[in-house]
Amino acid sequence: MSDGLKSAWEIAMEKAKKMTGEEDVNLSPDQKNEIAEIRKIYSAKIAEIEIIVQDKEKREIDLDRLRRERDQKIEAIHNKSKG
Image 1: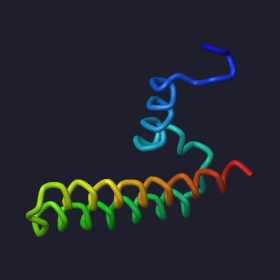
Image 2 (image 1 turned 90 degrees about the vertical axis):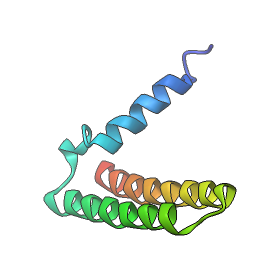
Image 3 (image 1 turned 90 degrees about the horizontal axis):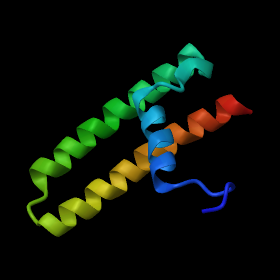
Image 4 (image 1 turned 30 degrees about the vertical axis):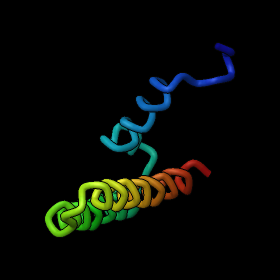
């Protein structure tokens, strides 16, 4: 594998750091609050889908969509703090 390419493990570790807040050091208190609010909202939306949607395939599609939306919003906040 080339030095310029990241392995799936490296990408997963970076994403995990973002999700656990380990990279929140450069974020302002407002940005941290915004991320916390996004996580709270999407946690509720995910719980709602898990309860309401009976079809397993549709539930997994909906959950995946919500998780990607949440992660994109959080990543956008991180990207704002970088520059």
